[in-house]
Amino acid sequence: MFEGPRYRILLVNGPNLNLLGEREPEHYGRVTLAQIVATCRRRAAQRQAVIVDFQSNHEGAIIDFLHRERRRAHGLVINPGAYTHTSYAIRDAITACRYRAWEVHLSDLTRRAVREPFRAVSVIADVCEGRVMGRGARGYLDALDGLLDRLGAPPWYQPHVKVGIALPRAGRIELDDVAPREPAAPARSRRRPW
Ligand code: DQA
Image (cartoon, rainbow, N blue to C red):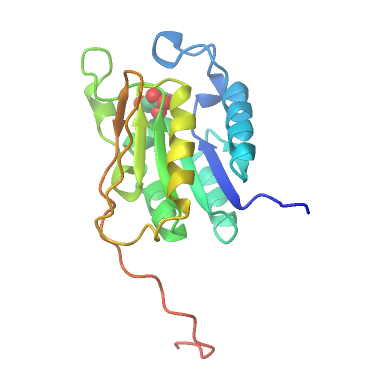
């Protein structure tokens, strides 16, 4: 009997990440975005999931994509690039669509010696269930695995669910407490509220 994928996972990359492989390899390595997506697709297929990937250099296009997918996707792995540090709009979209979301970065944004201080701030961190950084391209797989591991678990809006992962290799992984959230909206009433 054919069994289709159980989970539809969005893999979203923000500005300048289309240039991975040639862009500042000392920070971001030499792996291209196409290679990262292909690797994630393979891993997802092994785990009964399918990847829907999207890259854009435009904030609004990323938000439109998140909105379009909000009723069919089960989770999100996102590297918003520089929007990580500035985009309350992407943050709001993640919250509005109620995605189980994992944030990923190739570089370690907290390493003051090599990265500018403004990069240490992520405005999406507390609306994501987990965060992986400083692991290069491997970090995408870690984030995908983290997300898939938890998809069977209770909904992400349950307060104070602790998540943790032990990594075999050096690198930073930060997993935030899941922030307390409002309970899920009650089943929609047939009557309009106005
Ligand atoms: C990045 C870090 C951001 O500060 C930067 O703007 C990027 C890539 C990373 O993956 O390390 O574009 O998100």
